[in-house]
Every structure is written in C-alpha cells, then in structure tokens.
Image (cartoon, helix red, strand yellow):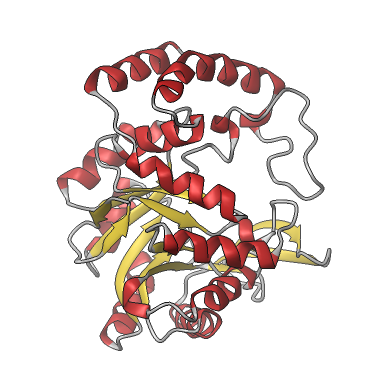
Length: 327
C-alpha cells in the first residue's frame, strides 16, 4: 500500500481509503454487521489504515461498526475520518429529503452545521467510534442556514480541545472552501470524482493544488458501475439508492460497459480487475490524494487494496484519457 500526505497536515493516508457508507446499510439495501467488521479488520491487515465514515451512514450504525472493528488496533496506527452536518434527529437547517431508517421507520434528513450541533455531533461520534480524537473532521455538505465561519469556529474549538486533529470539507466549491480556510486551515475537500464524473477538474482541482488542499475522491467506481458488473435492467435490492440514479439507466450502463471493454485489456495484462485499474487511474490524476473505496466483505476490501500496487505508464494513462474524451 502506498501512502499520501494530506494537504498541509502530517497525516499520511492510505492511497486507497476504506469508505464506510455501504456498511451502514442505509441506502445500500442493507449490510451484514459481521461481514463489515471482518472487512475493516482485513483492510488494516493489507495496509489500508484510513477509514472514512459519517454519522448519517445508517444513523450511527457505520460509526458503531467501525468502532467495534478497530477496538483492538493501536489507535496511532489508524486515521479515522468522519463528518458532521447531517441530522436525522434534529429538524433544523436545510431539509434535504425524507427517507427511512434500516428498520423502515420514516426519518427526515436535514443539513445543519450550527455551533452547538457540531459540538454534540463530535461527542456522539467519539462515543460511537470508541476513541478520544478524530483525525479529520469534515462538514458533510454545504448548508444555507449557518454562516461558514460559525461552523468552522466550532471545529477550531474542537481542535484546540484535542478532540479533532484537522478540519476538512466535503462537496464544497472554490468560494466555500476559501471562506472555511479563512477560519481554520482546511486539510481536504472530499468530493465525487470518477472516470465518468470529472466536473471537479475545471475549478476545484486547480484550487486545491494551488492551495495545497488534499482531495478525497469519493465514488471513484461510480458506486460500482465502473466494476463492469452491472448489466441493463439490473434488479436492485429494496432501499438501494442506485435504483433510478442517472448513472444506472440502461443507456448509461451500456455506454459505460462499452468503454470498459476497451480498457479491459490493460487490466488483463496486469492481472488486475477493472475495479483495480479504475482505482489506480483515479489516484494518478492531478490533485487527487486518495480514493475512497467501499467494501462490505473481506474479498471486496482486499481486492480494493491491491489497486495501490498497480503501475500505469504515461502511455496507458493517455490512452485511457483519450477514450474518456470520446466517451
């Protein structure tokens, strides 16, 4: 496993970081707790020392699973990344959408990052994770009801108290990132990025490079689409958010699979899977620090980790990028 220094910090994150959204089960059609715990333990064994989670992932379930999985691992050998600013237990801020929890009960999701809310969320996350500090504390989404400086003044207080090491943002544009950085040094921006979703290359990536802000690329496999395992008319489990998503229409699945067939010979030559090739391409793009890769069992996490060991030549990268331009 290769490791990358995150922005201006002294954090060294694993190039492939464990993404813990799916293990929470919520919006992914359920998940096995036992399998998830074994997946996290296996990820550490293969050098994937960084874990990204959030309270909203299963309404605390993901953080609790992470906490149980890491309880016997030396804390200083791990980098725990979590988030704040999405509440299902407080109706305040920007109403985002209506949903159900993993038991089918209706819940309302709000984006909210008020000062007292952040302090409470941090305490709740520390308890669920079974730790006394968070390495990277990230606002999950922008929200309109709280000034950015108020939110990050709260994070700065948590840093001063030793409960948080570094501050990060997620899904922020350039202006929002600069405003937050005026309050506390921003280590990273976690934002969606994949072969078929490259909008951040226009403004966000250049700004992050210029200001030495790391980029945590989430959904690098486009929520599984770029593994090549999906076919048109795929039957999703009940509650799976991908059902009806624009990237999972029959037309887009077909178009994507045609592209994947063209790059598959590169993967075969390297005795690698398409997913491994896609993950390695992702972390070789300018400005990208790490790729977040979700896994719900040991096989998935060990296969994801192997992507770091791949080597791509400049010619191979250029060939892939040329096909993407056509795509």
